[in-house]
Length: 170
Image (tube, rainbow, N blue to C red):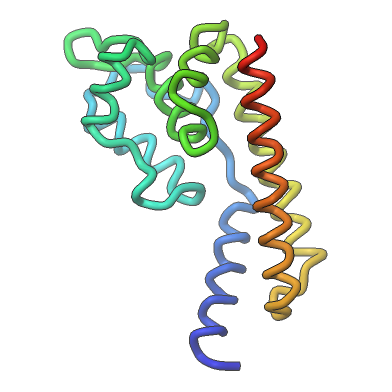
């Protein structure tokens, strides 16, 4: 096996293993003190590093735009409370799948009451998929991994389309 292929396989397996016990913070896990923007970004980045690529992380200008667009609550004395941190957390997870308008609608509809339920569901989906990949998939078989990646991408696209249609009709 070529050195690059071996490193890629190890990186995939290491990444999957890092997700095996991955948890997302529940509301009670968020800092009890309000945080400044840089602290919010650092906190969210530290919790989502295994799930997102670096270019997908929040930036100060993104947060400012979400506040201006009334997608998230405004800071109080330049500090963000746990509800706003949860909103930003959710946005960072969903912005690749849902439009900001769809996310705003979700955040406007009793989001905070369902936040823990949503992250528990996400953890369950991560755990199910990671377990399958580690236990049922031969990480050495590049052809099967390629087909699996295509199948997952197609499935994600179909589910994304369905989610958009459901949210559009609510």
